[in-house]
Image (tube, rainbow, N blue to C red; front, side, top):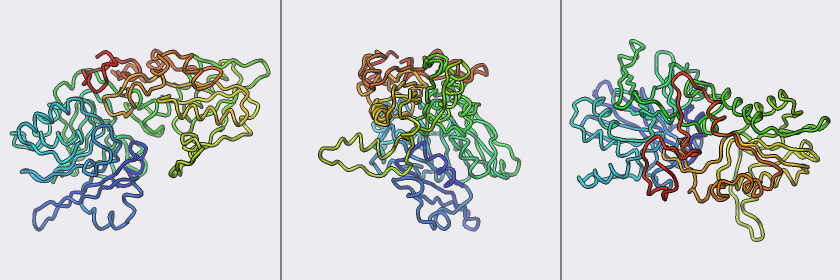
Length: 469
Ligand code: SF4
């Protein structure tokens, strides 16, 4: 089940994958943990079937797909779930997010003699649990989590419990589902669909949920609150724009629904003018902008801009390696291994390309070149988010601020247009973005990568003082 869940969540991390299971031996009254972790995609890491049928046995499991933001990505020891054995038994942990006071806590622990095995921020949670003077594991975990700051959606496996926890700001999603009388927890609900589990609720910001044998018998779980859990949440708005799958339900809403709305708002804010007889062809950048493009095209028609949604770019899902050839542009071949154009729908047309975001701008530039080569008469670029200008401290791996196209062009939209080589460009404004996401049930969002308004203080040295705190 954990394997299928990881498979459905592959988009959240492609560097490495792992599963740990808790296997309780009734006769010896002892629990053994079985672990398998490696670099690669889920399918590659668990290629050998016997890993799942013979090695990873037990009655509970947690897994993780790695997408590194803290800790070297090439360090094998950083692959999660991290597993340790301490005075109260085994403990395994999987973490999505990024801790912001990691360096400070790590230094403090090192000064007290703690030896670190990894360079991952997640390891400090294990040390804080092990060092706690509390007598029961749940109190130890709550004490540890009250000391760390930043983003964490966690699943923790102990000898007899499965624990799910989410930081008080709730940057990353975390959902609870039911499978028969068992419980499942995942970052996104698409992981429940693959195993026919039923979504129950989200782990709310600042909540710690504990599942144990009593939960299996009663169907209920125990819930605890972290300190600061009453502050307003800061859901990562970029999860709706790009990161989550459209078939998931996160922060209380369907991602598909929100993404369509983003496309609609963009069509109203930055329509592409058409003449009385002229029709524009609206194309998506597969796969992340598919849904938003549908919204853009339908709203364009509704507002009197004759448009037609077409599939003009085809994405290969089997991206291989790219070799550096003399006299060949490496970036170009890299994009061409991933995307190709459907000439028939583009040739001689006024084309609108809808994308969810522009980060460095290198892929967008190459896509524009491909569409131009396919014979587009005009190209209009539309983006369902504001320009990304600031780094993320909470688990999204953006390049340095200098590498972001919006900063390279000094925030000047016309310069970005020239750099991409398009007839017009339109970004969804922050105001319209916020109007397009669910509001009213107490939702509030983090928009720091667009606005520079960080919900918490962050380590400025990491960002070279590029933003306000
Ligand atoms: S800075 Fe951007 S990517 Fe990071 S949590 Fe905030 S909205 Fe999400």
